[in-house]
Length: 68
Image (cartoon, rainbow, N blue to C red; front, side):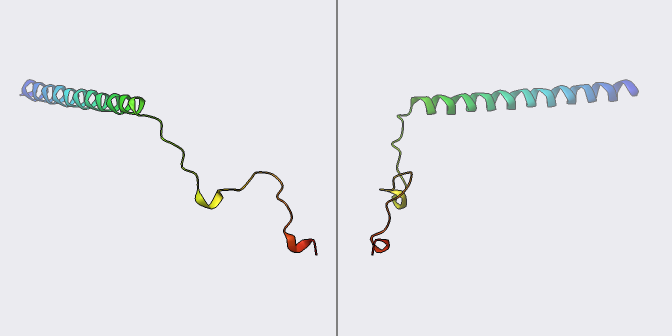
């Protein structure tokens, strides 16, 4: 009796391990496909923030109202 349960559990464990292995392999394939797609794409143009357009880093000129 004890022998039958042990065989059943071993078989289930093997099935679980095989399923994990297949899932891990499928994930690795998908990961590689995404990586390949990223390297094949053309680099995107940087689209700047329209609110920051024309702003120069560093000290800014004084507003005209301060010169009066």
